[in-house]
Length: 469
Image (cartoon, rainbow, N blue to C red; front, top):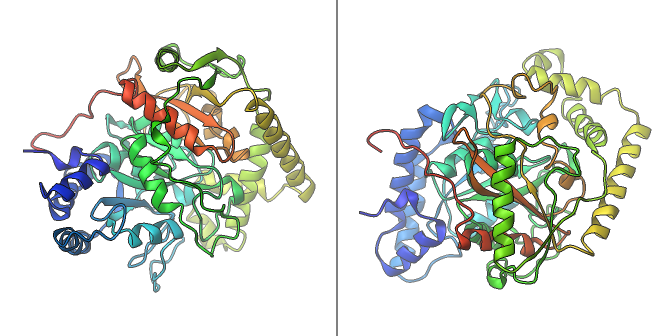
């Protein structure tokens, strides 16, 4: 029998159309996977099986009538618990959030999924307010890696990454303010895309401002393109949304022949990349060359913008907790409390100086992409480390940004960037390769990623499954 929890969204939709199985079958399979893996990795903060099955029954009736509601009718999805989803609280990983209330509004991306008939499994774990690159919080505890639960799933969309990797629904919505889709995608061996800022409308706006993007977390690039075609629909609540573009699914099959690819192994020696990680990434880059891309080793022209990123990020944290009293602040993750205190000490001039660095970085990358269609780097210089820690033991890093130097620069520039799995390190844990394109060229990122999947280069060993599942 087909293991429905192992299928992509597109495979499920094809099965629905042929009548081989139904959305009810797929939803039951996803719920069974959640029940099996939740004690191991803690990927979900809320699951509503009865409601999911009711949505699946309605979808099955539509498929029987050959009248599917939209592009993902009957596909099980999960939503990171930073995004509003009506019918239950969005707690944001924080003990400061009150669960009481109407909770009767969907975020724009969630609303688009509902309009297209998606089946909502539940909400996934996040660190408190999504503030760091690993997933643990005082409210919901630690989220483990599907390949080794003693290791981190990454963050801040760690719950979504673990859910997708383990078959608990093929589609999930994450958010990315400094790498929060791409980091856990790399650590968990799945695909994650941070679209161009504004391509997916966001409401309420993030306290971290225009660093924060909503993006798909999926098993492959084709599912991500499908999800983008759904969630990039317009929503009047986001004043900064982009005008609707063309279909991302239609853009997948252009291939990479003739594409100008810049490969930067270490940002010009600025980043120490573990040798086994570097080898896996280099092999993926080699596959792009075999597929007909023009590959050249070239580094983007910028120094590490981490201090400017910190100014913007920590200021956002300060704004987030600005009106919290002492009792609420005492409930916060100590690391969040620390960066918020630092952010409160910045002046307006400090903030504007960081904006100047951001604008210059965007200009530099604009010039870079006048020569190269895409930039390829490691997603991260390491594989997943111990769960419950913000930084790897013995690394000397103080904050999560110390080990994510390839991700946050492209939140500053608002460019589309994706993590594609490209094998495993010497420890058997997944490695990701990052593909970046100029603003508004999400199609190029997805094309290159889809080509890697088609070539077999985008692969990791199967996730170990608990006995009896």
